[in-house]
Length: 153
Image 1: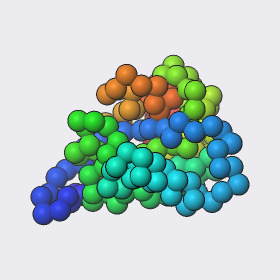
Image 2 (image 1 turned 45 degrees about the vertical axis):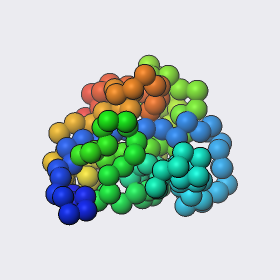
Image 3 (image 1 turned 90 degrees about the horizontal axis):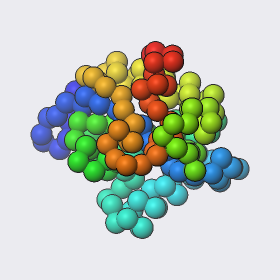
């Protein structure tokens, strides 16, 4: 069970995103520096209170926390309550029909699958979707349903 302030709410969904960055974006920077830059985009450029995602997965598979899971995210308009947002670094120029491997690394694939499994162990996750399931966007740059069906968790 995840808590939001004094109101208890159930997390039932994970929504996958991409940062829409080029493959070599901040290539030699630490993951923490990349997360700080994404946070800057969200806070300074969009005026949000914090980074919109709960988790970010770097090209080398490093997983970093964005917002705390007990704070509602800002990652899908109209679908933030009861969801956890995970963003993959990369995905610039991707389309909804791309394969995962077209825009992301094998290390990211393994890290994403492991993170989803860990989140499912402590929450009531019922579905895993892509941002493009809720908005006319290419994000996350692959078909989440097909990705999951190809190698179920």
